[in-house]
Amino acid sequence: MPLLYQRRMSDARLEQFKQMVAEFPDSPMAQFSLGKAYLERRQYAEAAKTLEEAVRLDPQYAAAMVSLGDAYAGAGQADKAREVFAQAKEKALAQNHPGLAEEIDERVADLG
Image (cartoon, rainbow, N blue to C red; front, side):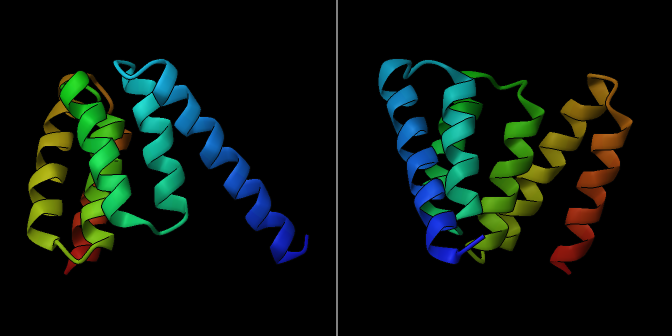
């Protein structure tokens, strides 16, 4: 698949998620989806802002917390990433998701 085509698809998905957030600003899933799209594009500041909103809207949203940690890590904010990963791990364990907790441990280890 040509790179330009992939970029256009990525742009279209990003616009789709921006529209979803515009229509449903109080939807944690909409915010999460947009944040993930920004993460894929390595736009870490935008990802962090959007994922922070997803977590604010749903403080139990462990997957959004993990992605927020990824955004902080990508932005070079290892301490903030560790803090969010620790909170995400607590939520994952409380929600009986040991696999997600293990995934979080790997991310923390990768931070060094």
